[in-house]
Length: 491
Image (cartoon, rainbow, N blue to C red; front, side, top):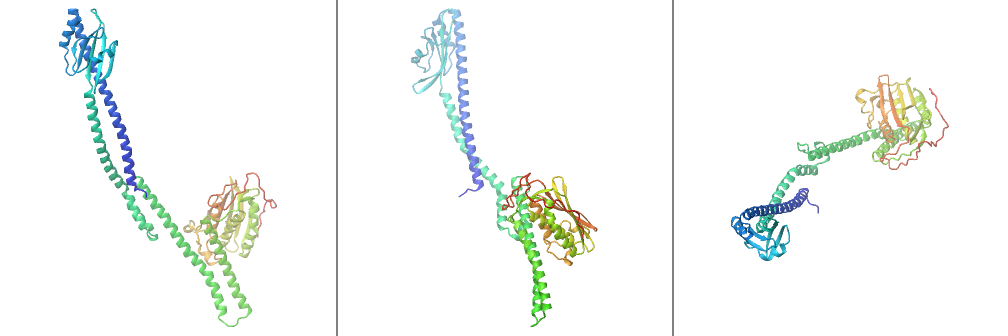
């Protein structure tokens, strides 16, 4: 079971702080002990220098070490400090012992300068011994002091730290818990609001603290996510509503034709043929609409495979010219094509053909009889441009941003050729899946120009099409060249 974040933050903070305090306390104890020992040694050195100076003065008067030592003993009498004057052989002459044992003197003899700690029973003594020469012979000054005061200072400091550390840790834990709870309270509130959120309340978002910290950034990012989810839900609802509306029309027409035909016990052959022709046309429209919706649904789910291969763009589009010409003739529209040769593509030929036909059919829908539609393939930098130009009524300014949305149809298309408004969305998906783009390049009351741009270089298939397997190689175009160019065909 995982712990709450505030508990983990508090434990981590206390753990790190405890380690820091332990290291700090150990350092303070070590530095305090070292500094106290240095001060202690400095004091012992000062006492030794004072005793040496006094002894030399006395020797200058009496020239006798014993008498000078006795006078020095009287002059240098410092509480809690042992000051002993020794002759050149290390034998004591005079001094204040104050608990320092003479038994330690043999171990100190023979040294000209010595500062060390000597254990005498359960007590430690700090000793400074220095040897001096004079006109009346050599002598030694020994100064010693018990280290108990240093030990007491260390003990007091250690106890102070031992009591202060838990107190500091406890106070720090309380402060850290409070700070963590205060900082994370907006997260708790947002979590409760997220638990209560429904599809209908996505647009309301979460309550975000008025701050620029990470919690505020998370809240704003989550609200933007909710906005995208809400937009996706609205798009799905609109898609379902539009799909239901578009599917209802051909179904209703076919059903009405069948019901009217069957309403009489007998009909002649021509009436049955007319009814079946209506049913055929409506079911054909219905089938195409379902196919288009299926393509878009698989594209949204990333399951529409791309059969990528090396090809020549003019060969691919040449197969669309005849179909486009037939459709144009049926609508009384002139059609011509100009395809630049030798433009290599790494693409799905069938999808590129569908993209081209969708653009051409869209142009024919909005071109009145007697107009013209032109298909052009040309190179532009590192891209192949598929340009479809018509002499139709153009796209209104209010619809220019909507025409690539699903089920969007202009009024003229609804009244004439019908359609479900899925051709341009499918064209856009095909172009984007190949690393390209489809755009409305220009439009006016005298016509429109749509341009699809596809990269000429071989491209790696995006992760959105996992079923595709690219076989493209940069300089190995393997398809036929039976139709190197398509001249301008005019109907």
